[in-house]
Image (cartoon, rainbow, N blue to C red; front, side):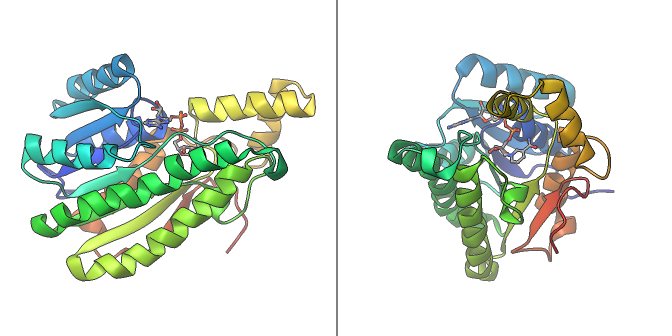
Length: 262
Ligand code: NAD
């Protein structure tokens, strides 16, 4: 299937590993020109090199902390300087720290707000005029299945993802007249380092063996396995593509039927 992505210009945030990296690789395979970022120079350069080698795509790597106010503008300016415009943004960031609601400090709330929610409005604010100019716009944010069913011990994530979903729905109606589509991807448990880290935190918190935590996690997924990052990236590609042209304001879970909410 031709997704019509050849030559489209895309920003993928927080892309040195995990779901951001897989999304960047997926878009590169379809012929997109990329700007990718994360906080560590060596890691983001290594990610860009691998994507170039595997796909032959043009990839510009930037060191940027997505929590920081000016970085959204710099990402968009880079896409415009390198490629002359921008059609696609995949908004992504590291997950906030685990913990229960009353254990979270004001500083942790503030940082999570900047990293996971404000980073979203900032990148859309910076990118939307370029998408309008290009006559093609796709905004995809990677959130969490917690938007349908909050996850124990992830208070910050539960609160902020719900906020992102509310903003995405609002934006989908505000930006539709400009031809910009806005959707949320809600991963359940996809096999990345974040999931391994959360399993270790839960094992320690509950005094359980790591292996038992992993087994319980798999038992809660009707498909019987974690998702693979490329299985989420396939949805990114579809939503970014011409094929997704009438889908906007949706939150789509990628969870192997783990969630049981309508
Ligand atoms: P990950 O921790 O494996 O990778 C996160 C990536 O973001 C890394 O490249 C890291 O360098 C980068 N990053 C982190 N903070 C950043 C910042 N402030 N600025 C720039 N780059 C930053 O996580 P993942 O599993 O790929 O998940 C991506 C997002 O999806 C996270 O927000 C995570 O909480 C969420 N999520 C993931 C799953 C899953 O199953 N993997 C499930 C639900 C939600």
